[in-house]
Image (cartoon, rainbow, N blue to C red; front, side):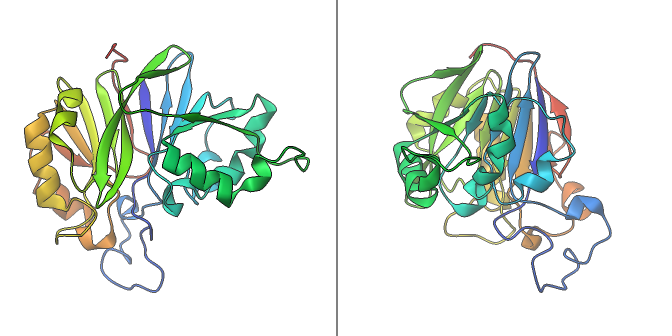
Length: 257
């Protein structure tokens, strides 16, 4: 199973518009971050996690082939703002969207033209599937386990696929959800910045979560320019913890949950 980081930034992206800090003006390509999303490929199945406003730019360099499922963590714009750009993928089939009821209801309000009885030609045709925290589901032959996490006071979803888990916009993880994260090879989780934040883990908090879950390796995502320069921060992290960057591709065994 190959996981490609299409974007690793927070809602404003990096560089942030109008900012002239050392990160936003850095010449290191690892300091340039589109909005957070990953593309997962196995021999048979292709899955996208989150589809933000940078999706078109992110997907253009990739081979054009069917998306078998789009997993949405929650309804905030930086995670769903690119759904209209799924139009070309409807040439293969209706695009299956998986998320919780709060997110699906928000999509029906925001892009009602995709769900009307008489659709305008060319609109993206999205098939919505409700995710339940206590129920695994399949995309093709890939089993996916939802993980409930808290984005401040908003319940959102992370997802586990085999020995890989993707959690973004986390501020806290309910104690009874940690059992779903045992035995991980690879954890991807948000770490917004150095200073504390109301609705996101900061760097020290993310490191504590990694320590508790104890995966073989962990990658941080959803980082703002306040995290600091990629190279500087990376050099200070534990050996098995990494700052992800746009375009990074890793492999994980697609083991059963």
